[in-house]
Length: 281
Length: 319
Image (tube, rainbow over all chains, first blue to last red; front, side):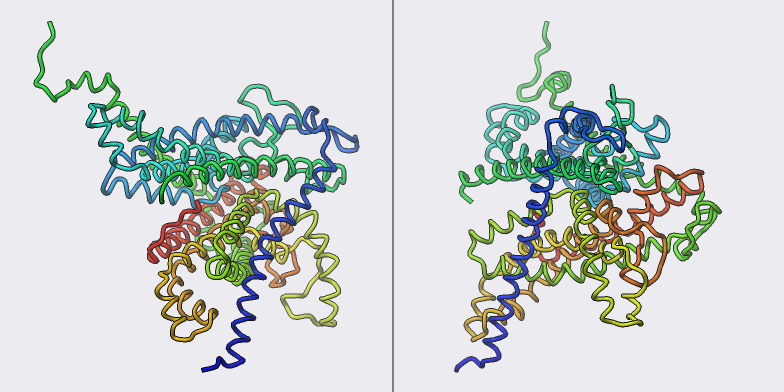
């Protein structure tokens, strides 16, 4: 009945290896964070948030224009992607059924799987080729990227609302739209908000489609119709440059971007976690 | 004055005014908009790549000249670069990812498992440009220091995959960066799939005297293999479309050398690095055709991945 030595050894070695894999994966995260925080932290200064980039050779300068540019592009993307995705998600969860819903679901997954750079090309040929590089086109590209995730998370969270709530509202005489607006959506609000936040975090780090939509700009970009600098695109441009001073700026920008993305991510996840602990699962 | 309606029926006008039909119509339009956008995307890619499709035909996929000056374009070096970097990234990330998923699903106590999964999912949230930044400014210099001594071990005639000059930015660097980016996906999806395997199976195997590892490897993993394959396909789809991190470390050279150490290029990264500076309709059209090819491949892979994950009967929840 005793286990052979070989089997015990294989057991111990393989199980230990799986542990090592996990530690390496988690270690990578800490390496990325640690390296970026050390490098970025040392490179960061108040000027980074308040000043414009300076020409090569001059020390100092900042990326104030890129911070504002990113904020504008992401704001625009949210205004485009979230309402469309949300309403389409409401349609799928509350109204639609049958073949049409499956088609939309399938196409949404398809749109979600398209590499971001291809969406960039689409906006490039549709918008940029006609109106030139602009904050608009960057916002449209990221907005399209937000739609599928906004839709899927809306649908998922609305579906998790118990049917009894809907029936209760209907029984009180509320119309369907009123039921959705005043009962179903508020019940799912926690999930909806966190879904939108995760979505926002994802697109705010997105770079590829911005290269040929928002393009870039060394100066402020007034209004919405001109090329604008964005934080991710600046990180790319500065990182691959041969100048050590620009590398420092890239580290600082990476630090700011990652802090923001992780902050939104963790907040969103903790919103969901604190919600699900109340519910009996 | 007012017409009296039968009870329980609300007039059409009132329904519209109360927003009920209106709400449904607006929601319907938004849902349909997704179909319209996707159709427009396919249409635009198709139309704007017409010039290059007509001139080069299917040779576009099999020619390795990329000569913007002469106006001759073939996408083979980029297809090669994408395939090689993604395949090797999978080769690194799959054993690691599945190993970690096994640990998290089978061995780790639930609290530890949840905490570690949380961290690993955060790693997936790190923007690709930041992975690229670290890749370019840390990994590439590191490789430049480490690889030449290893290469010297092979003497004057290194194997083909380790031959040629090495400048740091290379196919090898792109593989490593990609594997870091896709591993979190494999881990989090595979873990879900493994957790969905019924407990009875484990108990039965253990009761028969199998060790923990034998139970996992011979019973649990085979049961979940389709879902794991699905996670691998998802990761592959992500690797193929991954742009920034690859662009920054791959070197941007449209060549096929067979060596891991030489610079190369991928489909996504050639578009990222050349589209804004492309001059001439043929050049732009060719780049858009590269995009069209990338689009086609990623759709096929995504569809395959979703079918496989569905077949295991678990829902993908991480996205």
